[in-house]
Length: 407
Image 1: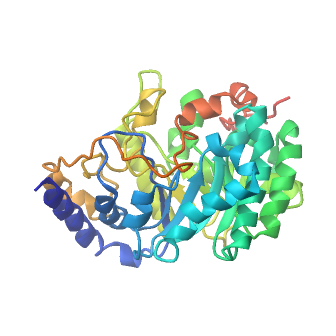
Image 2: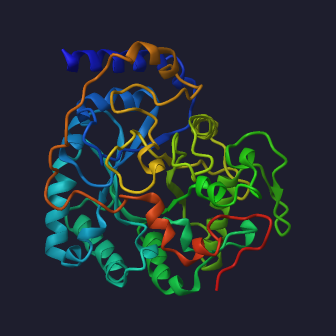
């Protein structure tokens, strides 16, 4: 009965939102994390993903239950290889076994298009992880070549914005000098394999760390005066676009101006601790609601106005077992029972939120995924970024009133 009730409510959300999303031509991506013990079964998640118009899903592992549930749905998947498995994947045989088990086994029914190797590895300040990242990427790609899958499945890795040494003005964006030696071979690999450069960008952290100087409207895509890049003369009316273009500039400075940039994570928490300024339900509603509208408008950044944004919103669900401050457990667009965490103002999910309050389906702790597929690489967003010297000195916070540079 609980399953039926959940499925009915989710289906109602989907049927109503279907009246809205066909006119929105952008392609929405969503991060599907599962560090929780109260999430719905993957079969019940399919209509929720479709209800927000998402056509792309990013996992932090290769959970077989999820990949099976989304078979024949047409939804594109990025699967992840966790940081804890990078050293193991340096072995070509183990890499090929992983690809066979976690990717090839689900094709073509499940549309897996990309594999992320680790998450924010270069800003963990872990020499072992850093040294294993590129070899692991090479091994996984070689496995795809050997299996004839390299033309349909790309290999990349997601980075924190803390890899930037200079982020303002956007036209002066550059990578940290101590990371250039690690990043350059990865960029060369991505260019040769036609794979995207992934960046996790959170304007929330910038506002949280400097609310007196950073305009809340600027980070929430609300009407504001914006800023002008004095070098390029481009006008920016939101921080996310400025961050993205800072990455474009950093890539160009190393000779990779044509490398596509995808935003593998961005979002805003609906709740936080007392010292987490800005972490409110209203701000989350504005940030994610406005973000989805921009995605659907196919609006590019000032530096790349004709390039569609490839953005994965973080996250699908609130995850009650994530460590760190309260914000870490409150990034979800949905509560674990399938009801919207808040009104986004753009889809039918808002219209039926009251009707789904009786949905209580939970599945307890998630069933263990296949070996070498689970990931703890994204356990704490804030913890992962805090280790960066750039964040500590304020560079990642993108204080646009000063020229930010770390030494």
